[in-house]
Image 1: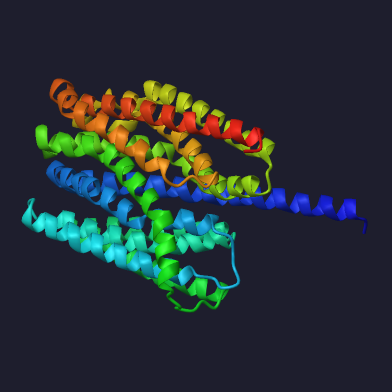
Image 2 (image 1 turned 90 degrees about the vertical axis):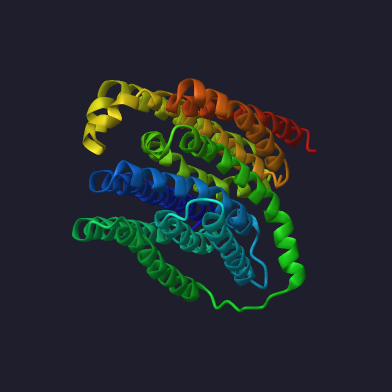
Amino acid sequence: MTYEKSHHILEKMKITHDKMTIFWLTLSNVIKSLSQWGILVILIKFFSTEDVGYFTLAMALAAPVFMLTDMQLKSVLIVEPFGDDDNFRVYQTIRFFTTAIATVGLILYCVFAKNANKIIIVIILYKAVESSIDILYGYLQKCDKMILMSKLDILKTLSAVAMCTLLSFCSNNIIIALSSLILVSILFYIINNVQINRLAKLKWRIDIRNVIDIVKKSLPLGISVFFSSYIVNYPRISIESICGTEFLAYFGSYSYLAIGMFQIYIPLQIFLRQRLSKCYQVNNKKEFVSRVNKTILVLLAFGGIIMIGFWLFGDIIIKILYTDNYLEYSGVMYSLIVSQTLTSISGIIAIAVLSFNIYTRQAFISIGVLGVVLVICPSLIKLFGVYGGGYVSIIASIISLVCYGSIYILRLKKWALGI
């Protein structure tokens, strides 16, 4: 077989593998987003608006803290090249300790500083287990086992929804229903560990210098995503504080619907995270830029389709998913679609910036955006109620997009000059 023929076969196999990877990643994230809607719909159908509000508040409180303690270890793990001594267990150990700190800290905060609602405590424990699974997914991605990862995630997601639905119907107790999410996650944490042990024989050799080096790289990213998550969740916390738990339920329902619709960009982000890193390492600027541009065009088109679709069929969708009283605030969905479109594009450009091995500027961008949000959020919510939360989201996404876009364009110019 000639070199040209063998090279052609290998390239064809690579394209086929890439397509299958994108397919399974997309399917996994579509099912996950649908399941998140499903769980929210289950809570709305079986339990009170106040319960839904506490569920939304719990997510808003827990998400930023776990984002901080997760420190984007998965991203650092993926872009780090394989060495002679695979140090995945170091990453796993760091994640274990930081997750434990986040869990204890959040529970103590809820007990002493806020109403220690049982729903909030259960969600904190659930997020802790999910954080532990996240780093396992990172290793599967690094080993290019994204199809296996997607299949496991699909199975976990469907199992969680089925258990939550069954227990909601049988027990009519929201604590029992949400606790099923924890049990399913623990089960799949064990299954993912088994799969990783089949891939490689990993040893628990902890080198303090290695730990410090990893933390130095990942902590700025953790700070960045903490502020980014707080930017998203602060309007929810403010709405609960200013308007009440029931209004938070309305805003949260539309927020999760908008975010869920844009989960299509998550598999693109996961795929690009690995591919852009490789393009940069081999100095393939043309493919790097092409992948980023194509992804942005896809997201713009998708945002436009979602906007038109909701304008035509929004009331029908809300009546099916939620209840008639949620229709009163359906207008907030338009601003959330705009903000999610801009946020998803900003996220793709942020991945490109990360592929340039830039680890520190993200934190400064997030701090700046959060500063603006903290200033404008209370006033806009007092003036416009739940609609104010949507306006805050648009402003935050525009600022973030401008900042990341500026860094990206400047770095491309330096790359072209060989700097």
